Structures are given as C-alpha cells and as structure tokens.
Length: 399
Image (cartoon, rainbow, N blue to C red):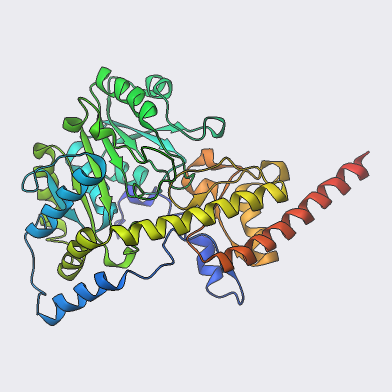
C-alpha cells in the first residue's frame, strides 16, 4: 500500500503549546498559566446579540466575504482606532479567526520557493502556514536585550532576491513585545527598499500598555497600506475565542485571491458570530478598555513578583504574556516546564514552542484571575528557591 501522507505535513511538528495541557487536565489542583485565552466571559450584550440572531433564524450562509454590516463596522473601527481606511466592499474579508486569514494570505501570495521573513519567538502558525503554501521560512531571531523588537538591520541581514513577505507579529505572542512608531518606520524603510509585502498580525492591537500613542499599525505609514495585509479579530480584544471570527484588510487585488481560497475551503464565517461581532464593534469599546485595565494590573503584579523572586524578565507592553528567562538554572525550557508541572503543579509553555531561539525562556499567560496568579506565583517562587538552593549546594560541593 502506498504512503497516504504528504511529506510536507509529516515533516511539520505538532504545536508545542498543547503538550503540557493534556497532562494538566488530568492533574488535580494543577494551575495552568499557559493558554492564550481571556479568562473573561464574552460581554453579555455581545452574547445576547448572538442569541437573538439564532432566535430570529439567522442560520443561513452569509456572503463569502462576510456580512455587509460587519464589514462596514470593521472599516469604521479601524479608522476610528488606528487611522486605517479600507473599502468595506473590496478591501475587507471576514475569516474564521485570525489564523485562517494568515493561512489564506500566504496561500494567495506565495509561489514555490518564495522566502518569508518570520521573526521568532512568535506565534506557532506562521512557519507551518508558510511551508504549506510552498514558501520557504527564513527565521529572524529577536533578542531579549532589544526587548524582542524587530530591527531594520535584522531584515537587511536576512533578505535575499527571493524574499517576498515579512510577517510582523506585534504585539507579540509569546514575548509581549511591541513595536512603536519609530521602530515601524525603520522596518518600513527596509520593506520599501526591497519591494517586500507585509502580513501584519495585529490580533493583540487593543492590548497594549504603552503610554501615549498606543498601538500603531505599519499600514498607517506612508507607502505601506498598498503592500500590507492587516490581520485582526475578536478573540483577544472581546474575549470571543470560541466564536472563531477574524478579518483581513488589504489591497483589493490580494483580497480578491484570498476570497477565492476562502470560498472553496470555508464558504463563510459563522453567521451568528458575525451578527454578534457587529454589536461588539458598535458597543464594545468600554468592555475592551475594562479588560485591558485588568490585564495591565496583572502584568504589573507579575513584574513585581518576578523582581522579588529574582527572576529575570524584560517588561512587556503588549498582549497578555510575560517571557521570563530561566537560563540561570542550567536546564532547557522544556525541562524547566516539566519539572515545574510535576513538582508544583503549575503549567507554563517552554519558550521553544515558539521557535528554537525561545530556548532559555518560558511563556506565562496572565489571562487568569489575580487570585489564581497569586497562588501560581507562590508555587513558582517556591520552585525557584529550591533550584537556587540546589545550585548553591552543587557549587559548594564542587569546591
């Protein structure tokens, strides 16, 4: 019997995020700080709109590109919040989460052998989506001493005549890093100089804690709108992960081809989710602001707790993750995470789940109640204290 499997997919490893959570689900009294999912319920008025749409029998397919009402509100929202202007008819596409938008953007834009610059550590889907689209991922290692920001010099060092796309994953999962306007202006110079296109994953755009301007989209910079696909959604900002709704905005000629893939593979995003999302954009700004303020309080608590326990961690200003360094303990990220889970019943994600350059780090999510964070951080403190004592005893014994 011939091999039924594609060599390409067989050679792609499964997501490194899920491993520990299968164990956690079976472990009594375990606390997971690993899942990147808001702990808030979807605001009631949004749920109510979803319920109402079902009661009214709105269970039909929508237009492939999405409800007209939703696309209009997406365009209004992006202009209101980030100064981006898109035609709702030709430059906006509603997708099944941001992940589908990433996938179909790459499939619409890449030919076999085209190179894609992917900064890491970053979201686990970029590299597999690139490979499945026939592209060649070129990884750029972001550095902790630069707050995990992408620089123009790093792009210049990685670009070749085959480079077509740059993935811009900010605010960043797993590091919490952000790119401010000056950072983006430097990146835009390299993009324009080498005639590149950009997939800007802005799913955490609403979760930034930088004083002043807040999140800036690279598509708002001169010359960048026509070469950028902006990807966003409702999962993180409005606590709507299970509703599976995202969107892409960009040049009409690219969106037209993305829509074609979406038509054949998906048909349309869930209808009741789309109706609920209209209400989210019309009436949800206060909900987003309240959740952002709560996350910011938890972020500050974690940074204070790390400082007290002597755990090195750069201060993140985006998303809902921290990315502390555990190199001093002389074990791999996976060993650290596994030992912490079995000894103290706290699940975190090894940094290597987000790329090889994540070695020596772990991802901790603060999308959990402050009460659970305090319990978990006390367990982490106890675990680290034991490791430090063991290391000290080992050095003394060696002497």
